Length: 175
Image 1: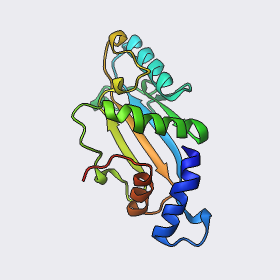
Image 2: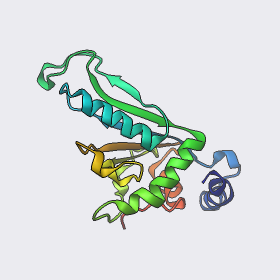
Image 3: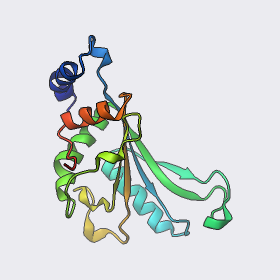
Image 4: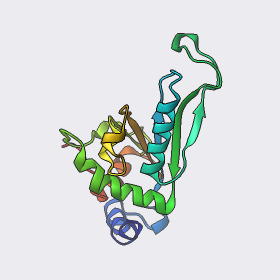
């Protein structure tokens, strides 16, 4: 996937946006995967979600704890509220290829991702309702189906350029 970026995508974006240098062409910097938990004390659900995220990402997730207590959410400081993984370099390219080619076609009733999920600076955020779209997860061994947040951070400085970058990777956007 990184070879595809260097050989095809860079040339395509240089022509389209009239960049004078290869270093001006935007690139995908990192991909962050995040699973949030409810504040219940179900230790098995925490461990299962952490295990599933490590299977999907190929590396051990970081556990996220609450920074301060919020009584309306029944949340105490120090409680585990989620886990995340940041993918860079080769693992990032491998995940992106598996996501686009294998996982996305397995999403039920999929009509494409929304173009409105860009954040204004070229980064793209996706919410996946069930992590069973990844072939690494065995549906029969799951007790609870969790969602997954995927954040694709790019070096693009606008949504238009970020959209062009992801479209060059054949990212399935809605028409």
